[in-house]
Length: 321
Image (cartoon, rainbow, N blue to C red; front, side, top):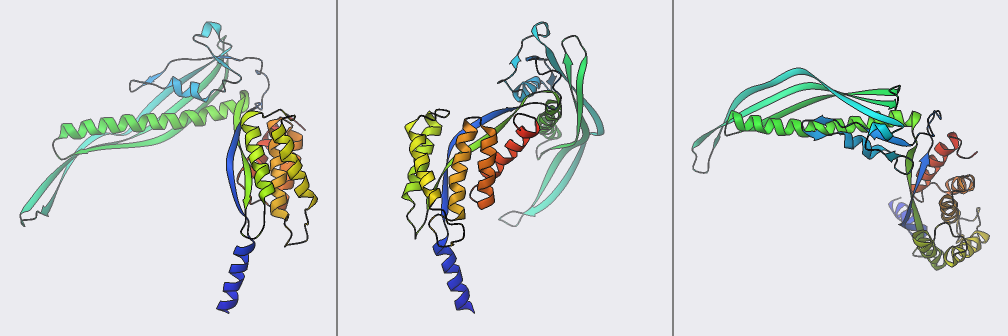
């Protein structure tokens, strides 16, 4: 029984393809909002806001899709503007405490260590608002998070308190950063163009039993094309790559498990074609190829699923049909 199992495992290893993708390009697409009432308004201002001496309005600005929107320096020139508020509710004020522990040193002497501590518990509520320039509120979203903070010292209460304040400042900013992203995502999904990044790969094939030099060469051509001439289908790189992919697909034998071009390798070819169409913004054709690739073998690379999901979102937002 064990011998048979070992032989089966060896056979699987012998015939398996080891796919080694290299990142070739990143494609950023603009995704329309659900509500199209304000898509013509592209100038946005973010009112300054400070929390614990740190400006948090920059967190909002970082989320805005600058491929579509222009960040203004004042409300006077803006079509829309963001405001934010931070509310803090104490559940437990900063409270001091002290504890002692004993231990033995190398000489066997008893050593007593005194630890001073401050800790607190509060709720941080972050409110994000989007207004028209005339002051009409378009949307609002509120996020909440419980924040506990503590600081310790073996020297004094003051050192413990200083450590507590620094920890609380850091955790507060991290909490507001997280809440900003979440609140912005809700509002942007409804009213603003957002971005989706899709990472595209040139997939080569490594096998111990079969020669895939042609497809590895095609992957090299794809890598060069996506790095230098994406969008130019007259480029010699993409032309040569497609000759090799098309020739491979002619060999495709779906019912022959020992075929050089099986389902997995055909999936690689269709994935490459999906990448080409995606780079050209031919989303309908890209969807056709990526679905075909996943149908044949959904395991070749995680970017299959990422591209499919982005295309599904674009289709739902009527970018293509």
